Length: 405
Image (cartoon, rainbow, N blue to C red; front, top):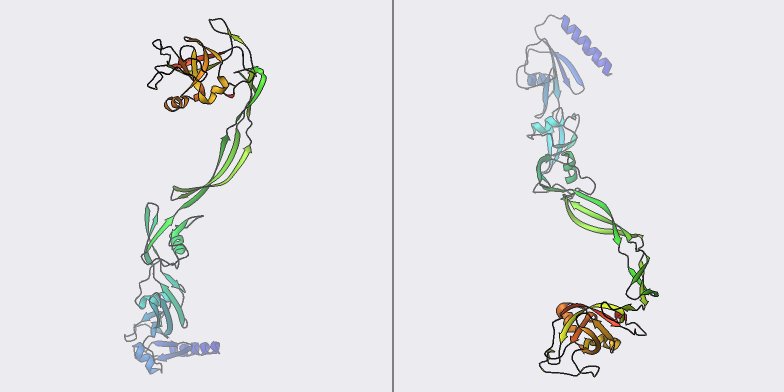
């Protein structure tokens, strides 16, 4: 039927061209209705009305494919195609609400422009602006907003109509990668104040090897001379492998978390023989033998110069205080009582008294087992304060005190 209608139209136009008239040929198209008329009228509104067509307020006329005012005279041309484009209903949804428009615009974008909306490249239009309007249509229009994005110390200004923060950042070429995050979060709507902060987050795994110090084990041996040591096994440090997760936010370290600690190699102890063999040796420069020599810190005293404020001649052994009687701390006196010693510069003496080793330990930091107090007669005291070598004379005891090993 449509083919026949166009065939009839073509035939009518051919006949009209063969007729002698000064009126141009006018083809009127109204939807699917096409008619060819001859009229002296030059105003589209009059032509349409004369031929039984009543335009509505929102309709528009296209003259030879170009929009033309309904109330203005047509151009002086031989052939005119007058098309009436009927308005349709367009339901428009914006952030401010929903409204209904009557439009005869050819595309969605033109309809929005004619409705007073200024369109920008970042605006969101659904369906797109170039979509033809053929029938009633639902359109969503979200105008882009000005947004400020802070990335560390940098600030970037963008425009976006995205529904989420993540969408706006992706459009602007600022995607969140890996552990990156944003405030508001990427799945949330664009903030009312337009402020978005992007935090670049990075986590690395640090692997470190740390030594485990070896210990020294001493084994008593009567095969090694007292005071000497013999190495049996060299010590080897162990190795601990640690894995630590380090988190950086905007380039700054914010946390460290130990994830794993593995002993990659156990330490091997250093083993030495500690000598307990008594070997008698001659005293240096004088006659006699000693079985061990120890460095000790010496102080001096006499019966009336002992720091008590009075004279005291009694001793722990019962011997009279004075030259030849030396004192040690009370905690080791029972091990050494009665032993004879030789101190260069002092001479031979007997350990026969106790003294204030804790005071020396507190004031000077000298272990109480390393302290000896040299006795002198009143009026003959000599200042021998300091470190001295104490030779322990024969005979050796049946059991060596622990602090002399």
